[in-house]
Length: 308
Ligand SMILES: Cc1cc2nc3c(=O)[nH]c(=O)nc-3n(C[C@H](O)[C@H](O)[C@H](O)COP(=O)(O)O)c2cc1C
Image 1 (tube, rainbow, N blue to C red):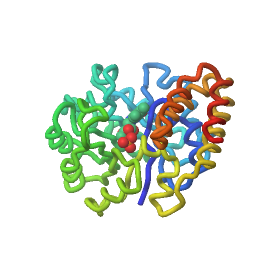
Image 2: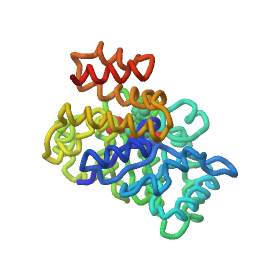
Image 3: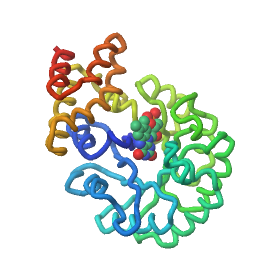
Image 4: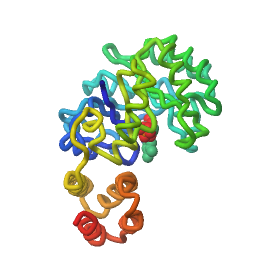
């Protein structure tokens, strides 16, 4: 079984990926949070840093791109090919209003005709040796839109299709539509990766019971909540409190080094605590306070107290 770390903008950048890779085994592929190409410069400095091969040594990494422009996609694909990347992922899932109103991310799924022309242009001009994978939702409004969308994907030599079986309007709410995922598994021309709501070994086992043919699973929030989740799924030890403390401490130090100060590192860690805190339903007030910490000294003291 292959396990991918889902891209999560604001969390799974190279600092997080390196710490996870160092401390916990099991993830077989990492996807960057989306890169959004802009004219001329193509990628912003922060995005270039995230994909810099020196910042990702030993990490099997796939850069993800968010665009609706054939030209933008090709520019970034050529740049990534020159850096040695062999796979690029297209984001067709982002539900954020700022993205969707521009017709990107899951907003691209509104216009299957445009999507078709986009793929035609991209597959025509793609660098040799480069593969394109796709991460998709089922549609904008209704799961039934997926049939048409998958028919378009099936016209092109897409390398792999990750399906988060929700529509845009659902954001991260409602149950995932497993009937539509079943359709993807049976009808997709390319291999399918499952993504959505795996937060425990039991969630994973339930999914595998229903779909024993799944070979690849992508996990986002569940892995941020429990960085040992893949190890546990593979039959290894559950996450210990010492391990989590160590992981969060090292992550804080790495962010402090990379960002040049503790304050920005603290903000990054607060995002992570928003997920990790779910492991401690009885200590929600303590976690709320920690997330509200006014300064680094308070934050550090609260973390020490939490684990003492
Ligand atoms: C804070 C946050 C940031 C995300 N950023 C991205 C992103 O940059 N690209 C993307 O394709 N999906 C992004 N996603 C979606 C996740 O990759 C994933 O598809 C979603 O969380 C469902 O999987 P999960 O239930 O395992 O978390 C983001 C989700 C969250 C909660």
